[in-house]
Image 1 (cartoon, rainbow, N blue to C red):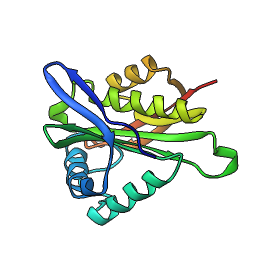
Image 2: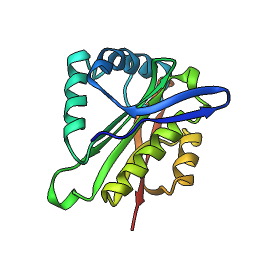
Image 3: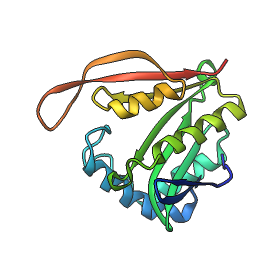
Image 4: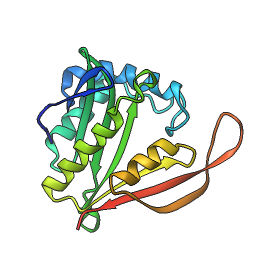
Length: 181
């Protein structure tokens, strides 16, 4: 699905959040690779599950056409610096929910980009009648967990010893959800 572009000004940086378009595909491929190498908060290490330009073109096309999918990008000075996706589940028993994921370049943390990508996604989900948004977050990502709680998400479960990080230790994944009654 497509949403209208929104403008934000936070901590001296002006940026927009808009739906991804096909011409974003190459930049998104490069951006995802870079972000995966900047943080251990995501599921992938740099280069894993690589999506090339054509792969992102297909994701954008699919997400633009499907009513319960949303692909957003955050743009600073014509540069994509983050993105988020909501992916609907199209089995009847799960048709009331979407799964959410977000990533932002490390140099742009602290400008509310992740928060505004999430807020736009929540507003979209509420508007189209989605009842539940789910996400997973690494237990050590305290800022993200607090943000999700402020926006109405609750902890629903813990996947124990779910990930192995660079230090060789196991970490839990927290499953969170927001239900709109």
